[in-house]
Length: 273
Image (tube, rainbow, N blue to C red; front, side, top):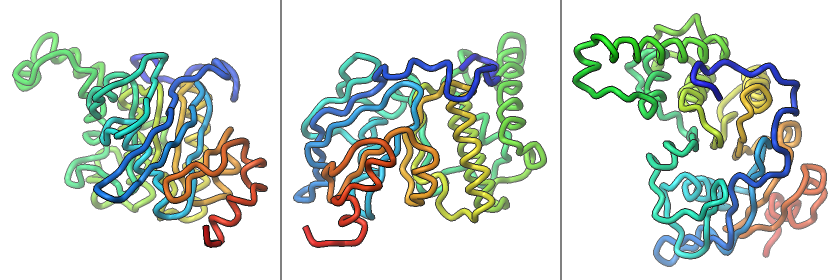
């Protein structure tokens, strides 16, 4: 993504290095005391794809996203990102390397406007110090103008210009989720992690969010990994799906392959292991 955060004029599904592994999870295990949240899980995320991570409640999906962006550190296994093994990753370091995420529960500054919330996503891109920005003079002023222009492009892209000055705490839930997506996009991520982006939305809001997710992937050449419970959305959006159950991987493949997998069917029906 370029600094002005304008979409690139590419044809949907083209302009990406299909098949190139961007991130690999290798034999990762994560425990909290005696509880094993993730058990020896391996899968990869290829550049330019939409990779779904699904499973019943408590399957370890959010824990896996937290491992990928450095919030949790696995006791076993290796994460490889852009060909390099990571160690002791922290969320701010992951963000500086091009990994952004949204959350199950909207994590916005409720008293701030849409514009200001999305501007916070530009923090790591700013080179001038706090004092320089407080004085709002010279290079700092020019830098802020550039970043504000980038945010305005995102606002237009997400079709939320009408709420740009509104406090996000007063917005409907679906629009808050869109603002959170905008903040993540402001970081210009190579890998975008979406934790239940459709949660709490009605049908029309889900259709809008699905459209934006596809456009982000195709126009910005952004790789996306998402957790989602709506199987219709997963089957429509994703290129590949990995399925977790009780912290273990039980299936991995195309949406059609996963949909017909008996272990997946049993997991969602609650069949005893």
